[in-house]
Image: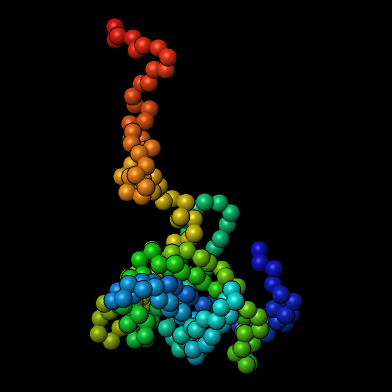
Length: 202
């Protein structure tokens, strides 16, 4: 469980705070191939926040509609979460069309703000880190609005990746000419005799 700072605890005890959510993704630009960032939060205006010592700009004014409740626990279970974005915000639409967000790194932070000044009372703290699993852009009927759904997979997903491409014979041969894994695919299937002759089959 996160230990909140004394100033946040004071505001929480007095009920004088408003939590906000910040969504951050690093995706590849389809045109340039370069990694670019997109930040959205459920505040009224665009704002800058310091995260891990770096200033990030988050777009407000309705681009981020909501995020499913974030749940976390010890273990290796891959958790999926859904972020809902507005189709009415052209900045969001243009970004998603211009980015290749598949498997893009994503983070969710929470920041506590003063309900009167709307200013943060402490630095944002991370509540989720993972990857974009898929993006669903709806085609709502005329006059209707259906949110964009971005499904995120938690960091535990990295533990389910196969290492076959990394340690296959072909991969090692291309990398350094190493043929250590030449017979890896038949390992255990071919009998090996050490210091003795193989017996003829009966």
